[in-house]
Length: 195
View (cartoon, rainbow, N blue to C red):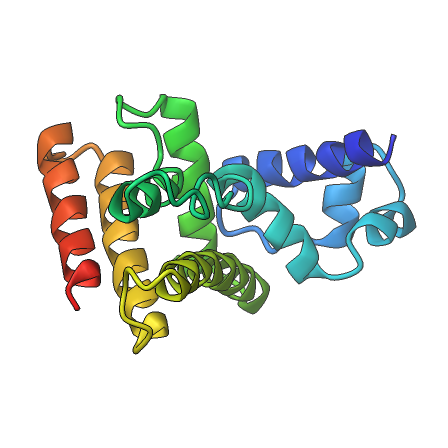
């Protein structure tokens, strides 16, 4: 029941944000929408930031997987590419509902009504993703296929490229084709693999 109750709360919060992207997600309002008491909500989400982080995880995807990063039978560049691609939304046009979820999260976070909790939750999501990319680069550095120097800077560079491609997939204005996106990702990988 814990998982379904948590999801019930997240769904209620997302519904409130869909109606009012500037909502502060007051505990009583979310609890009422979820059909539970405020103390029950606080049991599952002790802080507003925890609730916002759950909303981000639902809208933006689960924690990145290491996939085959340790599999030395696969070329290193292919392994890192595979790991990065999982961070991207699907290449086909995103469904309106999925795009709306992401845009609601962005509006709630950075719009005029954005809260510190929402920005902190976004920061936590970004830090988790950046940490995953840095971890993949450290594995490749230990294998001697990328330079050990500046792993964090290279991870930030790759995150910036992935976020840019992701945004172009979400916002349907002059979206580049898949071939162009793949070329941009390949260019970024070539920079990282230079010794």
